[in-house]
Length: 527
Image 1 (cartoon, rainbow, N blue to C red):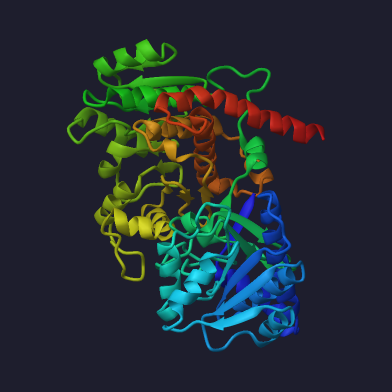
Image 2 (cartoon, rainbow, N blue to C red):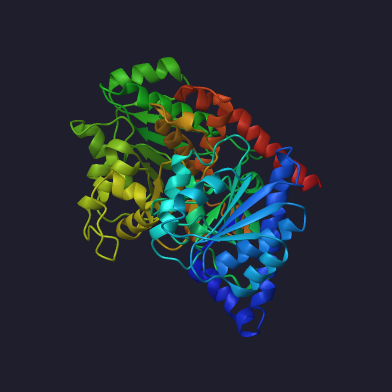
């Protein structure tokens, strides 16, 4: 599991070491790790180290010191090194080490922006070490002009040029992922002590490339993470597996209230997603014409027109493909949420739900739906007075928005996106980015809803696997939603195989993905 922290948490973990006079030791560990990461990246690309040109953009603080020390290490490997100082002052020891290693130094000014941008654009490696985790706001003055010029020149070019960010890309908030342009997108972000939450949440995640964590010795001082991400080993531990004496009812029964005359396919896709995710049975409640289509596509589904109260299930899925005029279906959706059972509420159900719910209710909005939800709820702000009036505002501060929605509603909230975020109303939050851009296709969210519903129905009272994985059983609903998001992304990537896909193929690919993850679990146990 990847654990990510705020910059404040990292700095607090460093404080005892700094008080003990170990600041230089921490910096050496960080810069050596950054230099090694650059070497590994170049070798993976088949590039020679000797004679490679490295340009480091160095700010005046410790982040700039990390970059300068790293460049000095690289110079010792036979690389040509250039430092562009964005301030008249720089970390003195790091600058001295860089110059002793033979590095060339340029001071960035308004007059030198164009010349230095041209030189940096010709480098084989660019290290962004201007702003670190403590910085608020983005680049300013000549530093901003330099990055704008590099972006205009097409950096990163995709022609083998490597951009490595030191701890965080300059302009990305380490705590929230908010990005203040201009930001130089990194191929890899080498971060120290622990991943930063802002590297795993959009828009920051979109600027960070691959994230590599370099241990520097503070890790035992770190608190509970601000954000977590499941890896394959976590999935293998958390996936429910039927026992020898399991039957369809013990494996979970999911009730589905979805679809309409306008969007009958949404109900079909939700049912297909649920069936592919291992639920024992699906019971559908809805219009006869939608039920007929479901019977044709999913004969395993038991269809009816009854009420929520008289339908015996372990969890509910409501909202996919429903519209404001579907009064009977919307009432069923409200009844499902009020039932106290685990419920995934998607799309058309979101506008009609109560303001306050419970953690076992999982809301799955996209950014536009989340903005509408927040505008409807009491408060209409993120606690600092700044509203989320529209999709753009949510997309600019995804982690803040999803956490705010979870606190206001007291439900678990999953915000769909390239990096899907899940927040519990307590403290746990997750980020999963296992998919492909091809998942942005009609019906994809309906399949995701089905996967979440299936996992909710199978959750039952078996909380041991969550506590064994370091997850508070009371917060397992957020973990289940994150698990579903990961499975959905992996299945989408497998189905796409690098090209376009349709939503139905995500469900088709899911059993094989599930099997691969399960086999990983078996191999871990055997070893």
